Image (cartoon, rainbow over all chains, first blue to last red; front, side, top):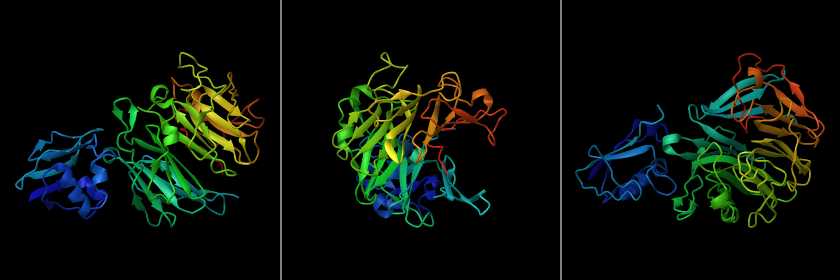
Length: 90
Length: 318
């Protein structure tokens, strides 16, 4: 199962947030599963059109995902997914 | 009735002051510390407190409290329906929660990029008010004023007829519905927009804030980008009441007396090009005669080296 890690900044809103192991085919499906574990957290990562927020990044094995719109990047069971805020705003 | 609680939405949280027996405002509490609060709304019917947060990276959030801030619950913020567009080819998505109002079990939120949302289930869900969103002027004639897209910053619900609502949009102008939001008409006659090719254009005006006298809501006031305007016929016609040679001219905030329809207050700034206090000295201006003349008040306000500006939602009456 893929490992999902989160920026510590999200712990402000989800204090019990810890890394997860998730079995999903794409980033989009992964976020749905993460949202089941932490209800509402998906709305912090994607906007109301389900696009990745402008100032949020998702890395797969240290490489930024390609599809910020449909979040269709494929995931394998050995992948490590990191969800972080972009460095913007100084 | 005198009010004893002051709730201030700031970029650093929702700050609460209460008035003590001596009439002095005392710091009481802060909610959402460190987080920008774009709007606070206290629903007088239900007693529910609402806080809109602009979390930057993480988007706009909506929180409510049914126990005056002891506990907060996050609820889903309004979402633009899939497929709707700001402009042709530009999908709409929520940018900012800018205004709230409610009456008779309905709750409205005004947003950037120009969508008005309604909830009829105490904020558990919101729907885009399609009558306004689909107004034929929106796609081509609305635009952002200081923000990337048009935004609804003022919502006035007629307390005698809850289907009668005015909104003000920067930049588009004032719109009115008398059927709860199905049909909307612009109400901008008499306004001036010196930033448009046609300053008298019906659409594209920039009201900075729209308010009304509660005892006679036909008397409306707006601090506009291009001056101060008043209407005595529910927004059908506007008169420029700016003091062109005095302080009361440019600004953002305006407050109307709830009973006396000739009284209103503004907090002036130099101009749209120079957005600081006039002469680096903060003042509040009041008219008691419907804008024929303005008096200036300075006592208790910073009078030296002040570069402050008071934005649209930051003036209220005790």
